[in-house]
Length: 235
Image (tube, rainbow, N blue to C red; front, side):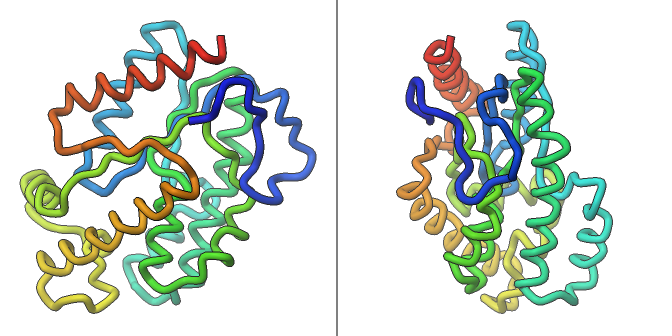
């Protein structure tokens, strides 16, 4: 979480011409695997924030009107290289940043992000991409006001995903990596790798790790307390 009085900044080169002092809103990110409870927690936080009088906007991966449909098609066919897929996601992110996130922050909105650049970086690191290259292409990213990573054990993620969808997602199981021919085993191995990478990134980006194995109500209370402190420190 940003310290009191800390100026807004980009992670790298940023976007030219953006006056960061005009971004009056707050950018709050919730990270975590499918089944970690991200969507549930964001919905709860939005209801709470709006009940407190804050205007909100939600963003997430593959929601850009520019490339989201093409990205879905590319994933269905599984025909692109890891680098090309990375650039697709980077384009999706950059479009949302310029056309959704920054305008909303200028208007004083609380922008709730269902995943941000951290998931994209972690996915690519697990697939052997160069970290320096990744940090460069996401150098346009604005540093959020708060980032929460919902850490859930892979065994629990399997149960939650299968209970909800009666299946496991190809990409969330890392099946493209050849970790195992069995999707359950591959999911476990892939999510273990992802969790380890997230904990490595935490040392660099300083986000808050939340125990996602606890009850949804307990997770909500922990997130709310952190956000309340953020709002109080900037009041």
